[in-house]
Image (cartoon, rainbow, N blue to C red; front, side):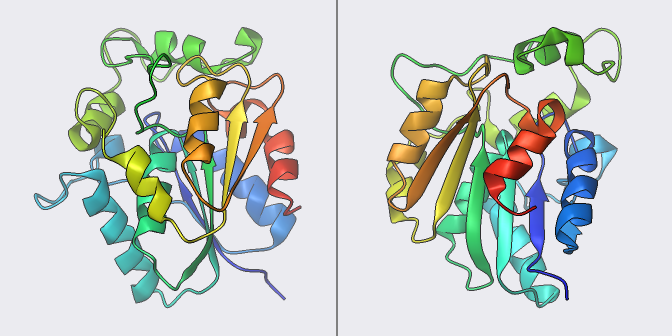
Length: 228
């Protein structure tokens, strides 16, 4: 018998940053794992009505309704973590649990996000990994990643929403906030502030891990999820 489904939400690096972990999660849990590409990422079309993170969250809640899914665990990394938080705020009865992995979107005094808007894919990766030897080959040489442009299309240039940290207090679901101790995009104190703003939250720090645990330490992330 299959267990409850998962919805995986990728960050600014695109769907490829989640693909391997999606396969691992499906194999270990024998569950349905949904891994959509956010509209506008990977060269996909983006409807004119999708202009904010909240718009995209509403679209994913509608997708869960259309597929008649229940007891869904939403797992989002980086931008996907912000998106997961916005989905939680919509209070869909189809979502039972949310996991924010090195999320972005809030503003924390003294702990700013690294501005990736002008960085090359290789530079972004160097900020994202605790262990540079685990860096995958960058998707392309020179210039900002096209997916970073897609990301900013939703988040704005600051990649944050000053209202988000207060709104997180309205989340009524259990939320697990998981963070890499070596994250140089959003540091662990930023992660602690994320967790502190959510009433039913737990916070787990992953050692020897950067901004992309699902790529760098997937087994440790799986263990933290307690699903397989």
